[in-house]
Length: 92
Ligand SMILES: [Zn+2]
Image 1 (cartoon, rainbow, N blue to C red):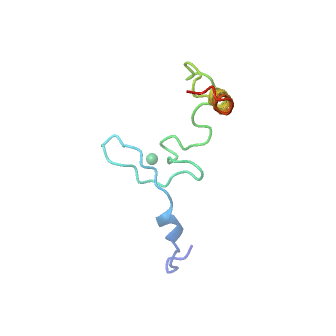
Image 2: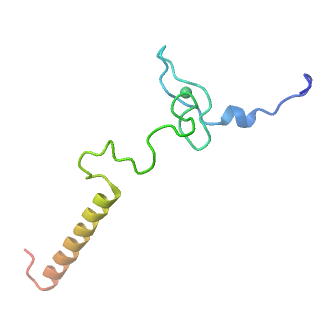
Image 3: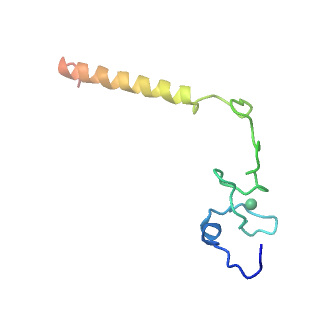
C-alpha cells in the first residue's frame, strides 16, 4: 500500500469494542470479533467457549428452553381454567 493514500477508517473507528477488563484494570479497546461481544484475545476467538449442547454448567434446568416453555404452558392453562371458573361463577 502506498504511503500517501488516505485510508478510510470510519468503519474501523465505529466498530463495537471488546470492553473486557484487562489485567491493569482498564477496559480493553480492541475491536470485538464480528458477531461476538469480545475481541479475539478475550473469548471472541473461533471455537472459544463450550460446544453447542454442552450441559456442564446445568444445575437444575429451571432456565432451559424446555423448562421455561413448560412453565409458560402451565401458566396459560391456569389462566384458561380461571377464566372458565369465572364464566361458571365459581371464582371468588
Ligand atoms: Zn479484549
